[in-house]
Amino acid sequence: ENILQVKPVIYRQITVPQHGGKDYCTDSGLVVPSVPYELHKRLLAAAERWGLSLERRLETIGVCSSQMALTLLGGPNRLTPKNVHQRPTVVLLCGPHIQGAQGISCGRHMANHEVEVILFLPNFLKMQESVTSEVNLYSRTSGKQVASVKDLPASPVDLVINCLDCHENQLLREQSWYQSAADWANKNRAPVLTIDPAVGEQCQTVEAKWTLSLGLPLPLAEAESRVYLCDIGIPKLVFQEVGIRYHSPFGCKFVIPLHSA
Amino acid sequence: ENILQVKPVIYRQITVPQHGGKDYCTDSGLVVPSVPYELHKRLLAAAERWGLSLERRLETIGVCSSQMALTLLGGPNRLTPKNVHQRPTVVLLCGPHIQGAQGISCGRHMANHEVEVILFLPNFLKMQESVTSEVNLYSRTSGKQVASVKDLPASPVDLVINCLDCHENQLLREQSWYQSAADWANKNRAPVLTIDPAVGEQCQTVEAKWTLSLGLPLPLAEAESRVYLCDIGIPKLVFQEVGIRYHSPFGCKFVIPLHSA
Image 1 (tube, one colour):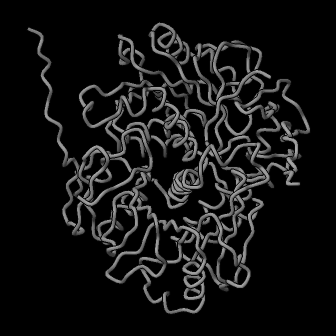
Image 2 (cartoon, one colour):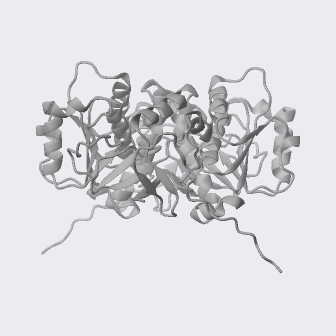
Image 3 (tube, helix red, strand yellow):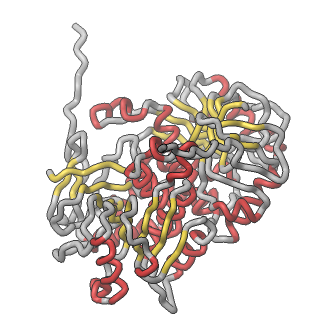
């Protein structure tokens, strides 16, 4: 007899000490739980202690989110040398915080791939260093930068990438630059990708067609968005350090779709 | 009449002030010239001055080279939750230098994706900081680390990733750890991927099936390897700063095959 013993597939490979309230699953049925913001923050801090610095994370997020965005723009069909005169236009809406820096890193990698990128970033006298250094690098691309919504295109662009929200400061939403940027996005008829969407019960100020969560999803406001998850390079034992039993749900990919479980 | 004016496609979109002696072309026919090592080094230094630090570069190279290696291992067919009991094994051969650090970053991302990684790194009292910090992060994966070739598997593994060579020090090749690692690789029957292959007329000490060049190819020893190029995130104006007129040959990808022109 030649019977292969097939072990049963375990679908719940990630268990968390505090639950964010919602389970997702991957295309192959693996369960991915959401985690509260506090636990997510401790996870990133533990990774930083081991040397996975914010700079490194910004780079991984930039590469992986731009790969996702390039696919959303049509991938190889759209971006060929023969199409160089019909380059897609992407508007990047960024606040002056880490979420904004993540967006600018994405924008640099997209501009490097010959996408027409227009970065909206409000003028502030003092910015976080992570934002300044991303802007510095971005300035070496042929992407544009504007500080006023008046300078954004009136006609629909190909994609809007939304990085206006910050997890730590919900009051931003009341500032005028925020509101005018959100209004612009909702009036422009381009589809929206939100990177690292804000937690909370408050509804999205900019309605996203797609959202990209980082590492593990946070509890998000109920919305119609299609949820994606990005591998940000955190090793298993770092998850363990904050009490998360983790097996990668990513297979060979770095960005995967999640479904409501 | 409804005639669309189609501008001719320009295939030589990258021009360099010093030529490395060999032209490559992409699948779509774009010409990619090789550059001398000195020019490549100046390009990386210019990028670092603008904030694209070694750390960032290590992360981009880790993500992109692991994506390539995961594809070489069979991609989605091989790495599914149902295949968890037949995880591929990869041996990573690293020297104590930046090329080694690049390999360790690749190894971390592969281990994060549930590949069985065995890192060979010789014992040195003093290592470059970039190597130490990569080892630190790698130690948080479930990957193994060995300092002696005796502890590497005798039976063929699925893939060997070779990062033994250093551009700055060809004498490494005469050291015993180097020679024993190269011998092991040539005896094991696994296919070899070399990341950032060494310049020079000397032949490869480890015969690679695939090589992955970073940014722009260096003049490589004639070999049978299939050459790939990795986008390491350098913006156009940084290329310009060292005299290179650059348009991305990558389309929507971060790793592309190159062919002899």
